[in-house]
Amino acid sequence: MIGEGFAAVLAAAQQGSEAAFSRLWRDGNPPLLRYVRVVAPEMAEDVAAETWLQVVRGLAGFQGDERAWRAWLFTTARRRAIDYGRHRARRPAGALDEVPPGLLPVTPDAADLAIERIGTRSAVALLAGLPTTQAEVIMLRVVAGLDTETVAQLVGRSPGAVRVAAHRGLRRLAEIVTEAGVTL
Amino acid sequence: MPNFPWLRRRDASETADPSLAAVLAWAQFPESSAPEMRPVGEILAALTAGPADDELAGEAAVLAAYRSRPGVPRPAPRTHRQTRCPLFPLLSAKAAATAAAAVISFGAFATAAYARALPAPVQQLAHVIIGAPTAEDKSATSPASDSPGATGPNGATGQPAGASPTGRAHPSPTPRATGQPSTQSTPQDSSQPSTPQDSGQPSTPQDSGTPTPTHKPHPTPHGTGKPTHTPHGNG
Image (tube, rainbow over all chains, first blue to last red; front, side, top):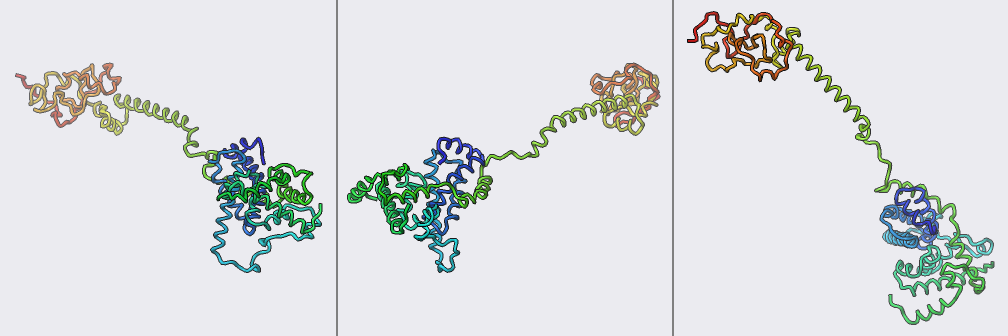
């Protein structure tokens, strides 16, 4: 997150500063990609690219602090992911053999978890193995940095349901890691 | 979605876990947390780590979209109007100079025309355009030949009936102190001073009274064009 200088950076980006917009993008794209790789792993790059196109179009009209900015960014990404999912649902599904290797979901095996420090990609893959709601809530709370109320509005659930989903997801993560025999 | 009571109780028990609450509140993963939760902390730390190279690979494409978005304030291109703007004062000065030169030239032309100093074809042209005397006017009869007494068959004025009082199809350009006949002169014209309105034409040096050659009558639709030599009484 940018922090105290966010307002100035946003204003500069809205005025046409490429450097300011670049900073917004560099701050927002990594967590955005990680979120999209959990909720829509097969089309993460497309969803992220489309999200930023939407952001560019609506940049001049955006008003709010950094939390509102992040909420807008991830809301846009979620809607793009849903649109892509609906589009894919209309198209006939192909056999896994026809899916390029780069698009196959990645799940780290226990050996990888044991040998190396958990990297970002592996952590994302672990989250992707959780139930959709739990994974999404954890990503929005932890990676996007949104509070419970904002996440609740975004996913269309109550704040209490969001808290329950987050806790259950973290507990499930703990079980997965324990089953894999990972030691610190 | 309604909040079910049993979910609320579960929610209360799970939120009582300080480790999870701390993690979800963006706080540091507490050291006092249960051992089985520590890997979770590692996972969450990895999720919030700094950007990887592949996560910053699409910056160029996004910046291109940013540059080409509608409403982007861009440096104003040099328009045709802007390119002409610096020249406008120069063009005004040139236009003013050209206009002044034209006026001066015309003035000199008119002066020469009324002085009958132009070549004959040009003098004739000046006569047509601005009413300057023709080149033939140089050979007009002297004022004496157009004596006041000379009248034509049409009456005292020597003009046919219906003719204009001045008997001139073209106004006399200048008042002539010498009584030199106008271009439309009839025998009577010499006795008539040029009307003030004729002075609308630029004056000529002839006003000084320099004698001119005799006047040759200029044929007009009104006047006889020819002096009559037979005086008729005005009777």
